[in-house]
Image (tube, rainbow, N blue to C red; front, top):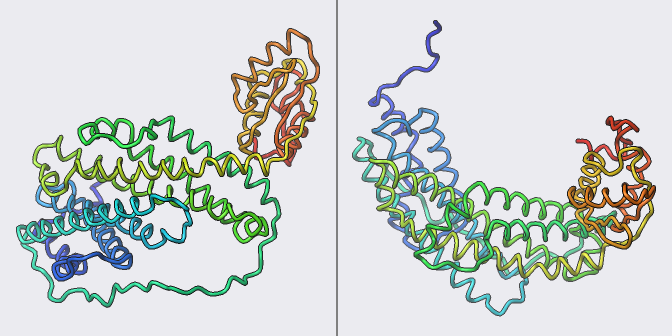
Length: 435
């Protein structure tokens, strides 16, 4: 039997290592004692780096699985999560006036955000106070010296350089924008599907919302979707002639960016609540975190601030998305043949749906004047029954010109199968449907 490659380190020996690796992290406590006021993004960035680095050191030595060190690890992890949220909120507060939301209630949002920022700062300080107590209990000594305020100064520019960079070529910016607008509406549908659009919740009901309806996994999923929207915008639309021609485009990006940042806060606070606060309540001996971090207040910030305003900004962007869909989607119709032998059964229907979702715009299959949603397999197969009964050899599709062009290619290869229903190789131009 092979011996384990992992050596067990005695706690007193690990203490010496922890003392050395905690030096920069522990200095932050002394800094906070001397600087009890609002902090800059540069400070939060430093806090994130130091807490992540120290947490990694603790995890590398499996300190979470050790009774002596477990609570100390929990404190460091909670600080890291709150530091992430604080940095994002600091970014929002600094960039807010550049978003051009044109909303009357801006002061209300900023007032809420400042209160949340104060709560997070106070909680981080309370956690560091407990870090000091726990460090002394473990036998650690605090390092001499502190951080310096000048190290975290932040410059707030009142001027900007002239906009004279060469414009990007427009390429297919109009088509990308139509797809982007459709996907934006898809994000809203996802939020509504999760039941996240019900406004603010009474304090007593928050425990019924998290993690039942709002959890870390769902928040990551939605945040990834909206992050992709911003990446697509920046890659295909930013600095194009189209963006300069349509003043609403930059505003639309604001309605992408703000929900993305707020949903990031939802994600980090969901992680904090589920992994550390909720777990501490359930497991004996770990309750200490719940006496330091106000769990109900964390839920209040998560649901009634971050999630509420994220949804509000998404809803504000909905009208722009609908406007862009109507303005930039070129609608056309084309008559295409029905798949030979087996008609629109599962395989061809699935490929048509993939094509519709790839472009993100409306695609309809029209039979006897009735529209069927060609982005839905069930809807296509329902139409297939009528097509088979009537013996139709061709049908009409209506939608985005780009989507119809690819659909023509798909029909030319009999929708990806031979006359016996076996799959066939697609045209090179449609390989994205098979990957």
